Length: 257
Ligand code: SAH
Image (cartoon, rainbow, N blue to C red; front, side, top):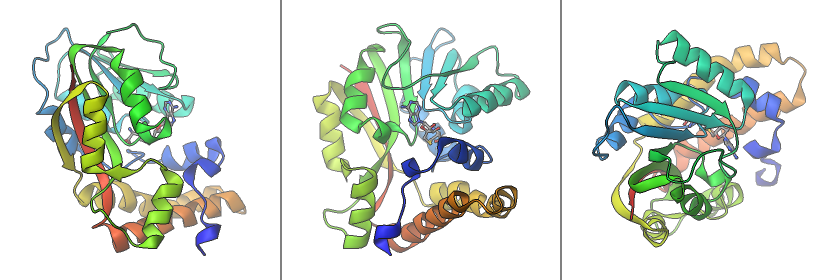
């Protein structure tokens, strides 16, 4: 059974976009958790420049925009997500302050020390936690903030099934304590860390998927990869239910030294 499990990066990108583009968020999180993370960030003004890396269709970006002043640049590797992102910002009347661009978070088209805040929910593992922290620091002003969520272990030991699942998906996955020390070594002072509550997984991530999977399967009838993707996501939801005391996303907030 375990050897048959595919990972999200094994699927074709157009299928991923079709599946996750139907959702308001592409990863665990919530309006409340984004607002809580924002509460640790001082000195924002209408001059502030905020970046949201791997913004997806902009679920969290909308919350950031509605609770800050200044301008926000969202960046994501999938053009279809950015199209939807910009459409969402237009519909909400946020387009004068928020724009989305296509790009890769490991090859950024920005100036050195451009941003007051770098945000990134549910994505840094794609380029590595330490690598992302080191590289992104160059784009932050002195005293600028970083706020991101990252898969983390809550305990020192875990049952084999869940250990294997996450080590295969995120080889560098570590405990909260280790991640904080990596952040400090990368040249940030530690501001705060908190685990996303269960509602961020169940109510805003797994439940909306359940509600749209039937339609996704109807639109992709006969497509084996689409079936495998749904099975994969169902398996992830089952694992969460079974092992949620051992892992989750943690919000890490740091300030560039
Ligand atoms: N922040 C959003 C999306 C998280 S899902 C949310 O929390 O809802 C992970 C996102 O990372 C996807 O939108 C995916 O397209 C993006 N992504 C993956 N690799 C990337 C890269 N190298 N550069 C930019 N975006 C990337």
